[in-house]
Length: 199
Image 1 (cartoon, rainbow, N blue to C red):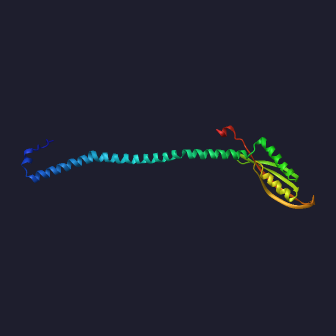
Image 2: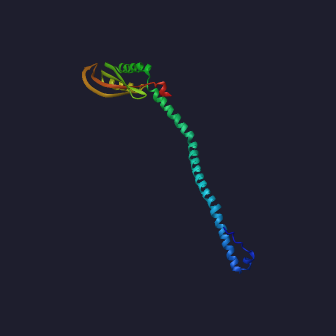
């Protein structure tokens, strides 16, 4: 391999001014191009990549900041939902209170001056964390007494729905036409969850 030719600076200095200027410009472009491709271009690509990452991080931080700003609102909503759940569960009697509820329904009928002909609690139907309990009832009394009974049942602190209501007229007694009403009174009972399910 032959050695690189030596460039004599005197030869360049003897060239006309425009040729020396042209060599200077070409040399400058070669050096600028080498700098761009070897150093600046790589750094520019790296800078673009870092800027993209930075933009993504800023967006992520903004989203998390928004969530953090709304955290007190979410906590307040959660407290309200927990209070509503407690109120709803308070309206569902447990095993011990169901007997008192059945007694309250029976007492409401007697207070409304109804004759209770049938009072037959049915089977419980589980529905997740609660169970439905139906009571097959047949009562006899005046129209006002039946309405009064329904009002008293609606005023109970527990949930009781009246379904499948059927009213038929009967004999006259106590100066009033006696009506016979059959219906299903549906109430709900809280089912305690097993310890494993709670965990």
